Length: 263
Image (cartoon, rainbow, N blue to C red):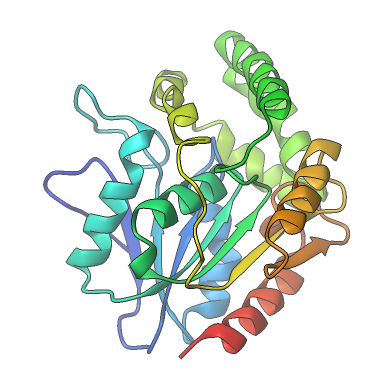
């Protein structure tokens, strides 16, 4: 994939193909980069135009200026979509990417063709108790990173993936995450419980792996109860990063979802 960068933005983005009828945007998990979707980008490259980004502080998106933070990601992504002359786009987010996908949908719903969120939670209705538990877990992981990124990545891979291959691939990306990039994540909570979910004008798919943490499985159930019209998928033999644990099933699931909700 060729990579690009807009003059006023720190975000490096990647494009594969511009000749297909529809576009797909992939938003990756924390501490890795766009390459966590490598299997998906290869699988869909001849069927969809692919757009992927490195979230601020990740991958090549590390040349920042004062004031840059993750709460600006939606605006930067919107600028990329406009620069590429994309009308509507399918968006897929995993973990942190699922949070950013929802934040983007809150701000720019008119650009969404479909929305798929995995290993995430409903940012417009996130239970305060769950939010505190989630923050405590993240703080513990960050403390490990302050001592050693390798130690952090070794622990993180077991939380983030279930299969050995996916764990190893996650680790290889995670060890490249700069410690200083934690500061860009500080404004993440500013996206939570700010907006109200209106009537969606696009289809929604949510899910996680069967071996994800219990809180995630519970949150998916609550989200489905809140939005019964959405589709839910629980992936067998998968943990948090379902696209890495079960890539073939994930690809087929997305292909079917887009087929039913495209064009």
